[in-house]
Each structure stands twice: as structure tokens, then as C-alpha cells.
Length: 601
Image 1 (tube, one colour):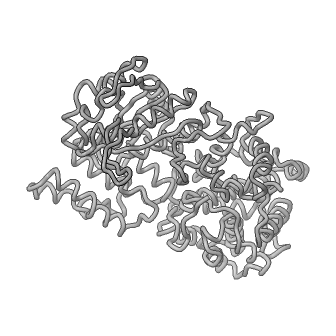
Image 2 (image 1 turned 60 degrees about the vertical axis):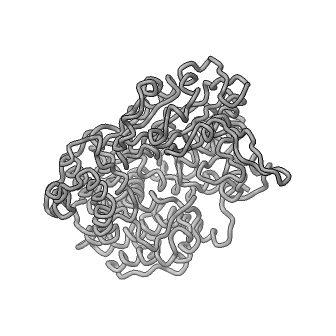
Image 3 (image 1 turned 90 degrees about the vertical axis):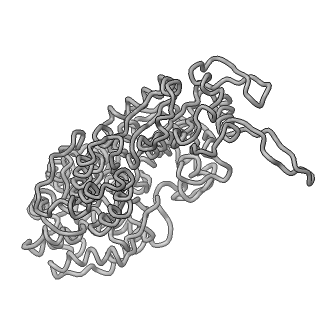
């Protein structure tokens, strides 16, 4: 019983982790060649200099840059890095990265040490424990960098202190989470290494810490089942330790109970498709209070300044209806969904609809729909998403429900909203709806987030009455939170590819019109390389620009990929305002290889 995984083969993973504790933490020995001093302070200092400090090595993906960084090292340094990668891969399930791929990556480094992986250690790579998600794979430099920082600072402790920490999982966690990163790569990257930190805790103390490497998943689970916590605790892992026995009592023992039971997972994970539109169902025993830590975590996920996110949250709380406006690709809908999910995992729920020219009041609020009863055609008065959400919100007044209206300006807004114009401004008033004799009031806990494309000419049709009822938040490439977003994302997900942000910035300067700006979302994808960037530019960005400069061939030539693509030796542009100045990256590309696969849990 408990958090330790018990599926076939996983004992080899825990055996390898225990060997790492013995050889790397208790001694200066080696996983692959026991007795040989590999995990020594001297070799760790050399590896730190090459991997965490010297980041100006040219190359392609993570592995290619790593080999360039290690060039000229002692064989022992190559072996140390290979053993770091070995421990890094231990947590990763075979469904996320095949064991052959793990071994290939390790052997590409071990070639510089002329050492092989012992059969017992190789067996530890075949199973894995968790599918850690795309950022663990794409952000590999930071996950690996954390391990080097951790062990190097561990070696600064005396033997007594090391044994004390290894004897107490909570004290060990305090040391691991309290590290102050000192290296050029890792400085200011606390959240970038969170997945590897969670993996370390489970591998060293599998009976105490859940085998979940996503801090966001831990938070959602703890929040969703907060009612099962008997003794309030600030530490999320202490809360999870109290939740598990109650979950096992209800659902039976399963080591990965939060993922293997669909009826459990749909309660905390909004990305899991529920059987009966559970998006808007309130889970039991919810903690309805969001913390500042939650908000900072969401801001970190969005790569926004927390202050910018707080403005939107404050706007929602004050007016209860906001609109995100900006050109395509600036993340309006994505941000709306993430904010709605953030509220939904605390309480309530959310739903998304999209306005378009054929979408009417009868679709959105209430109308007669054709039906067939007993072979006879007829019409039935049917509620639309607005009334459905309103009824749920009214039945659960302590929770928050959010209705996202995507592309709100593409529909005939005044016709589609109908009486909602009045109710949006006077929440406490009642009004009779068009197709019903019953009075209706808009619940105060039903909020709205609309998105509006500023390049769409229909924006001119949005009247002053609507603008007065919503707070408007700009999503423009030259203004936070979008300004510098692509550069921050590339630094985190694909270090060394910041030239793509220079390309986008150059195009937006030439456009010189924030309403028509090119958003960063085109290039925020894991398979980004030179050929993919050029393909996206020519097949998605240029057609967008051509629409606005139709017939102006001279202007269009200014936006050709070859004309704007930064020269390889050119100095990068000054980071946009809002960039993370401390978050330098570039020692290794974060792009996962094609056969690494996608992760899930």
C-alpha cells in the first residue's frame, strides 16, 4: 500500500535509485564501475563548468551540443555525465521514451569514457515510473542541470548531515527544494527544474512521495480532494500522504490511483474527457480558495509576469466579464482556457462556445429546436449554453463558473446576446426572456471571458454598449503579457533557437501596426527547427501578411523568409521588455528527438 509503484519490473528502477544513493550520495563512487571515484567534488566541478557555465557551444539538438561541451574532457567526466543522464532517465516510463533510446543517449556520451553499462543497471532503464510530460523532455538541460547542482551542493555537507537527511524524507525534501542555484544555466530557473526535483524525491523515498513529477498535477489533486485532509498542512506532499489512504479505502489500492481510475482522474484533470460533460460538474470536497502560489504557478506556466495575470483576475472579480483582444496567434483563447481551468479545478466549471455569423440567440440563450416524438415532427424549447451554465451556477453559488466566448465579434453580438446586454450590467435584476414567461437573473458567480481578433473587420461593429460592459485586455506583440513571450518560451523549451524571436520581431517592426501584429503561437511548438520555421513562415505567416498587402508586391518582398531570417553570426536583439533576464539558456537544445515519444502523466 502507498505511493511505491508495484507493477512488474519497477523494482529494478528502485534498485538502481538505491544504488545511486549509495554510490553517488554516500560515496564518491560510480554506478557503472563501482569503486572508481566518479561522483567526486572535483569531477562535478569540471562537469559544472562545461555544462552549466560554458553554454556558448554551437550545435543542433541537446545531444549534439552536449558532446560539443564535453569535447576535450577527461574520460571520467564523460562517465559522470553519462551516469547523470542515467539517473535522469530512471523516472521516465518506457511509453514516454523507449529504453533503447535512453541507452543510445547514454552510450553516445559513454563513448568518451570507453565504459559500458552493467547489465544490472541497464535493466533499470526498461520500465520507468511516470510519463513526465513534454516540458521534462524539451527542458532537458534544466532537469539535468538540477541534478548536477543538487549533488555538488550535497557534497558540501558533512557525513553526519548527509545521513541525517537520508534518514528523514521531509528534511531531505527541504534540502532539495531549498537549493539556491548558482550556475549560469540554472540561476533563476527554480520552476524549470521542478519535474526532476519531484522525480528525485520519489526515487529516493518511494514510500513517502507520490510518483508524480508534475507539480501542477499534484496541486490539482491536493485541491480537488482537500476534504480528505484531516490535519491541515502547508506542504503539498504531506496533504497527498493524507489523501491516499482515503482514496485507497474508496477505490481500492492502485499505486497510480490518480491516473488509472478514470472516475478519479476526471475529477481533478480538466484535460480528461468526462463521460457526461463533467467539465461543469463540481468535484466533492473542494478547497475553493486559490493561493498566491497557485497564481504564480499559473503565471509561470503561461510565462507571464504574475502582475499581468493578477490584473486579469482582478478584472474578472470586479466586473465578471472581460474580453481579450489582439491579432491572431497571441494566445488569447489559450490564456482564457487556462484561467478558466485554474478556477474550475478549485470549484465550479467552465465551457467554451464560439460565435460566428450563423450563431444566433436561439443557439446561445434559448430557442425552439426541431424534434421527432412518436414519429411526429415538432419543436421543443431548448436551453442554450448560457442558460445551462446559469442554472449550474445558481445551484452552486459558492463556486465560480466561466463561459468562454471565442471570437465574440464574429457573430451578430447584439442579436445573439439579446437580454444579456441588460443583465450583464444589472446582475441583481430579473428580466423575462424572449421565449419564456419565467423571469431570469444572471448569477453573480457566472463569469464571461470573450476573445476578439483585432484584424477582423467585424471589430468595427462592436458597439459602445458592449465595450462598456466588459473590461478589455490587450494581447499585442509589443505589449505585456505577449511582448517577449516567444523568446521566453524558446529559452525554456528550445534553448539556442532565440533567433526565431528575432525573426518575428523584425517582421512586426516592418508591419508597424500592432493591430496586425504576428503572434508568437505559430512557433511555440516542440518540433521547431530551421526547416520547420521556414515552412511555417511561408505557409502560415506570409499568407496572413499577403491578405493585408494584396497587390503591393514590393512590400511583400520585404517579408520574405530569407530577407528577414537573422544571419547566423548576427548578434541577437536586445530582449523585449518582460523577458527573463536571468533565464539564460543555450547550452543545449531542449527539443526532444522524434523517437522520444510524447509523455502523458
